[in-house]
Length: 272
Image 1: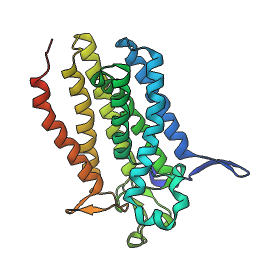
Image 2: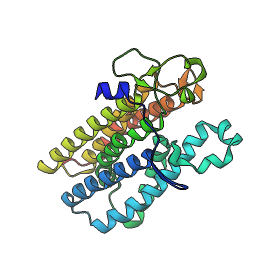
Image 3: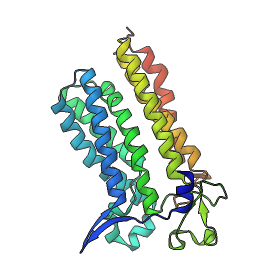
């Protein structure tokens, strides 16, 4: 696999028929979503959540998540989209920011569970492994789009980037860190741990809000830490605040909120 990444130059389009093109980016996004749905359905069965309820929720989350991810991405690269407004809706060319999807997703989930009188913490814990798996698969779309790569590297797993996709200051470099791969592997590890946590909860009947909160907290904290670290080697353009890239600021804020909620949440939850 390392040799393959080092020698292969991907193309964004799988197949074109006239004006119609199938993009690898879309294939990986859809594949990630479908795998996530399968995982969520399986967990929902264990927790006796009706499948129709999950189907309704997933529909809203997919639509809202894509919109939120795109809005956040456009905000991060606002000068470009102000000069190229027609490209704002072309998300199939890349440009879905996970922090935007998380924000919109949490809002939608809160409203949905409130309306349906469901347990927000339980549903969010069920969704977390699916989301981590979708991220692990979906990141490969960035590889085929030749985007979101890292700094130049001489490591044997560095990936070649076409000159047209390189930033001007790195024009003479040939191989770059495959940050998509680092995040994909990290997200898959997070997914695996989340499944283990659910097995523990189900096996030991720890089905209370505290453990559901811990499940969600682990996902948000682990992914935020992963993303914070990877931003040090990513070179895509994003606003800088206090010397940190915007996704790093967002990641730190998420971790801070989790740690502020943890003691208060534990104090107000009756453990079984």
